[in-house]
Length: 112
Image (cartoon, rainbow, N blue to C red; front, side, top):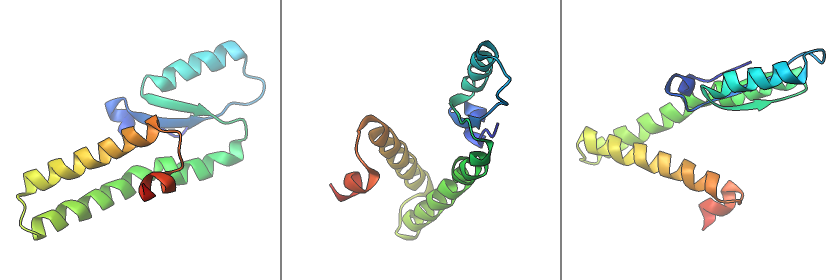
């Protein structure tokens, strides 16, 4: 399995796999365990784990870098750091929630 750091706040994403000889009952138990840290996704092909790690395992660091740049830009434009941080956090959170709720490609949402 490959959890990401938001699992520390029970909102992570864990991608996991098993060997074919693991019973369905044990897979359900593993799924409950991983979902105690947020969302989980079972992949039947172990070779997909590297790509999942690249997106989800490393992804939080990239989002944090974007957030840092946006906050610093807000401060550079004259906003107090606390306000810039609040604006960026809520904007990112709201965008994530909106994207999850809509059944549309992210490019379509961006272009709306």
